[in-house]
Image 1 (tube, rainbow, N blue to C red):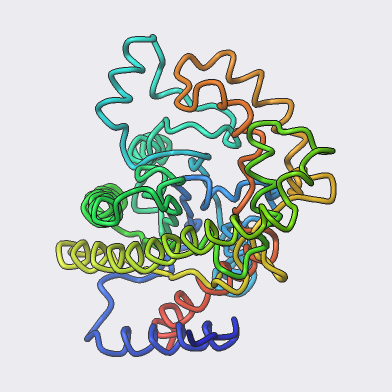
Image 2 (image 1 turned 180 degrees about the horizontal axis):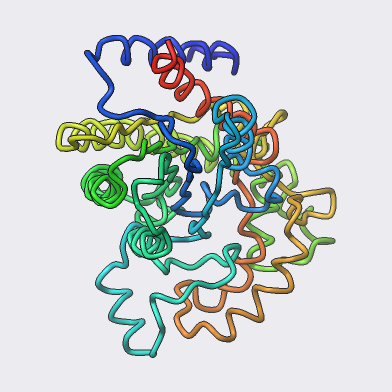
Length: 372
């Protein structure tokens, strides 16, 4: 498989964006406010766009916001950021889980700490909540989002035991049908906003270290750290290589199919939009730098097999406390443990920078075209 450097990838993205924009007779609305009003950015979605494990200043939406403020939005206007995204959020609450929430008395519209990995409030509800907080919806000029992987269930993106046909059906259902509906809702709610949909990345590849994969799995079930060598010896390692190959194959399908379906969702939604331009940004993270690779752009574990991100200690504190209050626990006994480990395989600081650069490469031709 051909490997591209990050610089090559970004250059290609910029070129494609330029050709796309050049082919349009006119932009439907200005990206920059014509008056002195502030530039409003809204961020909605799941743990990916939220930036699980990253400090606020390192999240890629913060990097994009700082770039806009410094280089694009001038004349004393402010760039304001509103974030409704949180870990685990689904595009919409599924019927079966909504029934379970109702039965146990859970409030599906209550926001909790955004590092807590729960499916509610949904991304759709995030949008509706944000709309109520804006005096003028036309002030929102940029919406950034990610969504769909938690609807599919993250584990299913690498599950070699899930029937491939079923996997593809689920990807179509959530990355295309549900995503298109979501994009049309955002377009109708914030008609003056550009919408940037950020694509997902490969989680595991054949270049991922099998020992690190094994140790992470053992961490979930709290297998004693001193005895993990029993599962990382030469014999178990050969077995895990077989598992890794199967998992990597599914991860590859997930990325290819979700990219295709989301591109189609963006295309179909754009055809229905009268004034909103929707852009899709594919992941700059490849199989060369996914989880447990030598130069990974995703969070892994440290030498003590603990999450290496900046907010692990925070989650150790808030996860058990908030999960006591939350009645609906989709992962049952493992809910608190998975919450503590939630940063694993999310973009780290390098991954966040790469995504910020990819988004900037798509946006630059837009405002340059308007200023020419």
